[in-house]
Amino acid sequence: MIKPVALAFVLGAAALAVPFFGTEYALSFTIQVLVFTILGYSWNLIGGYAGYTHFGQVCFFGLGGYTGALLVKAGMAWYFAAPLAAVAGIALALPLGAAMLRLKGPYFAIGMFGLTRVLESFVLGFDSITQGGTGLYLVPLSNLRPVYYTLVALTLVMILGTWRLDNSRLGLKLLAIREDEPAADALGVRTTRLKIGTFVVSAIAPAAVGALYAAYLGFIDPPTAFSPVTELTTIAIVLLGGMGTVLGPLVGAVVLSVVNELLWARFPEYYLAIVGTLVLLAVLYMPCGIVNLGMKKGWLPAGRGLFRQLAREDRHAVRAKAAPLVPDDVKRVEA
Image 1 (tube, rainbow, N blue to C red):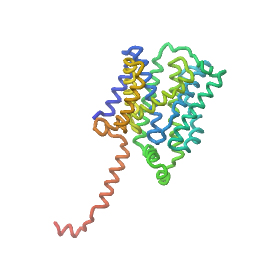
Image 2: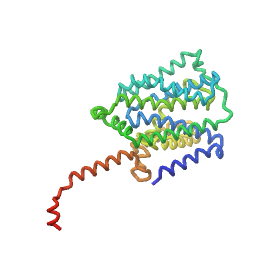
Image 3: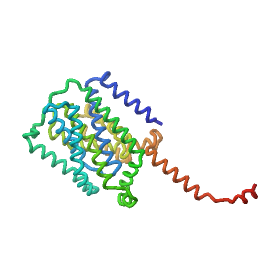
Image 4: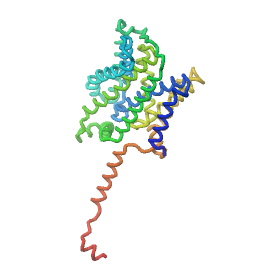
């Protein structure tokens, strides 16, 4: 079984070594993997744990990208622009979550997709500020290492935050909403407040990453900021790795990025169709994802420690109640 501490140590050491021992291509590829890993973890909060799947994560990514780009063009450093982009994501997510989370299932998913297209049209229409379809050009960064290490740090925060959520009562409440929201509400879970809070938290990292990605590219335009391919890739990553798991988005991002890059190099004209077919087969034959399969086989440690602890305590309590009570005088006679 792979120990979580050993896995974290290996991944952290490998990530820190890339700028020193890897090529520029390796650095650029790892940045792409980190971006999609963070997007996957953010989507996993509301889609994997709360069960509200949607096609609107790229909405916050694009908002953060344009917010960061406009602030950088105004003379602000990218490391100050990224936190402010996250604040912009919160400002959009609060009213959006209060309104959209009244919808459920496909209505919520399609509604979020429509809002993303509305925001893209808004960016295209205000060309005096956003330069419309031409996009915003930034001064290229002479050193990508600070952006890279920022993405590594944000990835670690997302992994640790998801691990903490997975082993907390808050995570159990989100899972209760996912499995049966009316029942969770009847049991006293404040479902509306919890859903909105999770939705807002899930918007912070994508907005910050959008600003970091714009600084990394030195350019941002509507097709890049609000690309449906980015949204679908994020969802495919979580499905492939395992929804509602700690390591699912990380495993899915690494596997899908490596397969995508290898196929793109060998079959540039057909790689998208091949990747789509492979993801479809993986979802059909591994519906719970790679991580859940690894847990089942014993290759990875089981998650949700608090849930398993409460289950053990409940079993012990049931056994204690079911044990027959033998009077002391009967015990003496039997002895």
